[in-house]
Image 1: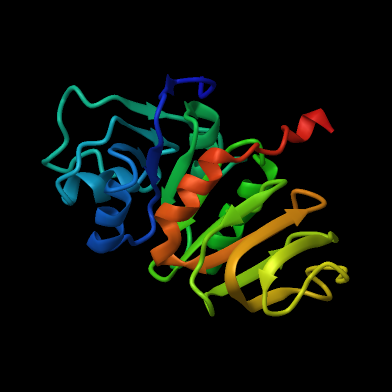
Image 2: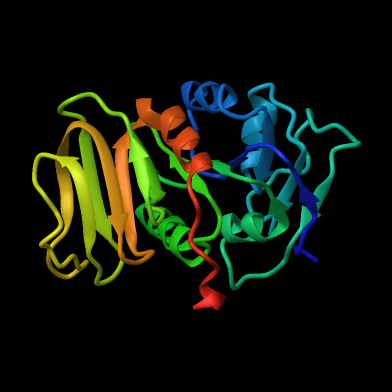
Length: 229
């Protein structure tokens, strides 16, 4: 049922059930005017005065009795308990790029699950926005203009290597591993260029770069689906 419920030709913002401040929603609204409510994220949007295109998920945290739900609002229940609501949304909603809110920052286990989904659905261009960070899976070739001294944190989800330019501490000779060398709290010397050897590297930047990261990802070539390996 969740395969291809709806398609968009422009970026969409998907809002999960974790706490999302008004400031974060407003920031995202400047990046994408299309909202998808994911389970309890549907209530978050409606309570904030935003009308989502649809609401989907397993509905274990969505309140269907809330008084501000339009009768014509499409609601799709996906009872699959083997996947997260974030994953369900990426399968069900087709878009050129996704902005995810309410998936990182509140519960660590939910945050880790969302980061895992970024890697497993590597062909989907997606950024996750929190109160302080924007995080994304680094594509095969990523370039971004940054101010000198900008925090650039790299975290490997598996053993991998990363060629880079524009970082204070070079990475090209490092063997990254979640159980060994990681790359948190690096800094930029200006524009950065990242070229990972595999789809196992996450990048965290200050949230003020969310719009610039989204634009940069739109210009890049994504990884092929995992099934294509």
